[in-house]
Length: 634
Image (cartoon, rainbow, N blue to C red; front, side):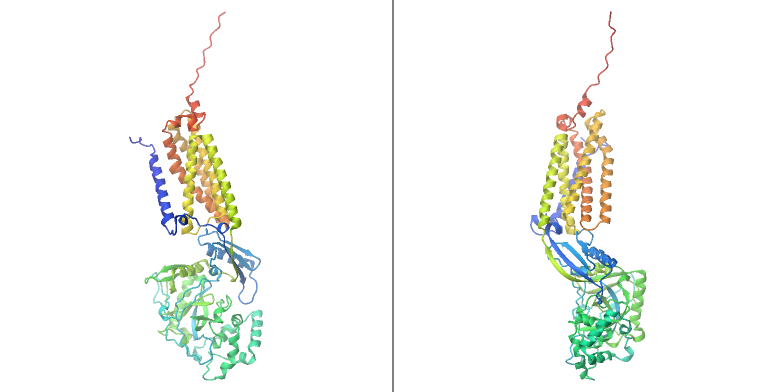
């Protein structure tokens, strides 16, 4: 027999709850799950529960060695935390230590954190000249550096291009707009040992004033290589032509003994023109931020065999509004760049200048196969790619190369979160055990178990049959929370820590309060003379508003705490909010429907069984009529 119109059908709510359980645990067992059943049911645990990796980064300020300001160090900490946490729930601890160090702690041993400390300073620079970067002086530079852009960014956020013409990059305009495109540089662009005077750019790098500390380091380098070598290098206006003056090789030989730190303080023209300064052992290993100044010409290498003299940076990483790792039309991973309004204007101007080779600034050695200038995409100290500009680009563009999904996503993330205001060098990396955290976990779970048992015992003692509703509701909430933890750990990297466990235990108090509100309101309805069957829906309507308000306040508190907090406190807030939302699901899809079903049973009418106590006897007690007094006869 169908229920009357307007009466709820508890079977529907219970069916919806069952469907949610089926979908959730299908995701638990099959969505990105591997290994045994135990492995599939294991949530992602935090640093304090399973141990992890701790890395210490020391901040430096370019090559002058000065400590960064407190503001820059805090800004760097926030950017690094965003890079590590991704969506903000990975429970990484990123703290400053002293005036130079940032300490990163992340769950899981042997984690590679090199990329999070890279500056990720993006620069777009026009290639002015190209030369051999092998560093050898045995013969005149005859190598043909292949301007390949087959770039595979390393975990540190840099790029390790391979000298392969097959993977040459193309930075193209996105379908949203633009004209022409960027093509790979010509493999036939062979740098010559000399350059025509008309194509020699102004050595602005050496003309710019330098800090006193760098000037002192240059004087130390001058004394190390000797006056003769320094004068010979300073007199070069183009890469040394050893065929015209074979003795020049012997004079410049001392530059090959310089360390990367010493090479970094030399003027850009000297780094480029001296053939004994090579890419593999010197230029590629210069300290971070050695070529970060956008107002100066710099020297950078590509493929480990070609070194380029690069123009001032006309477009910076700050001109990029967003970056995403996407698949292009050939199913290759690329990094799509969306420029800001001002950045788009700068990018269009740079591509126009390069396409037209304005002022003949690009030397013949630096031109691509179609005779157009190339633009180097420089990330920190290395060139990711150096494509030839084949048209004026008026729309968004892409950085392409030999990327896989991980490398493209890492590069896009670095560009999206912004460049660090200071540079870092990794000083220490160690694995941290979780002995203390494991003991705390056992103590916490024991305390939670004892508290749960006491709640259940009290519920059955005070509410009798209604206590089973409390017991089943808590079990269902725990199963929902556990499944959600497993799925969220795989999908968004949420890690469960002691703080998260504390948040879930606190949510149990909110759930217990909702039981008390509902059951006491039910007793009030019965005392007012309503039958148990009619009292259940009426009590639900009145108690529902209070339950929703209480959970909404808890949820709002969790959201505010999550937004303003950091570290493990953020995990506490996330766990509290998650448990609160799932408790509301159980309230609407289980507690009320099951109470409706109980109200139709005979046991519900028994005060000893139902737990309604004195409410039912008070309702069933007949109303006593006052007796009429009789006059006493005398």
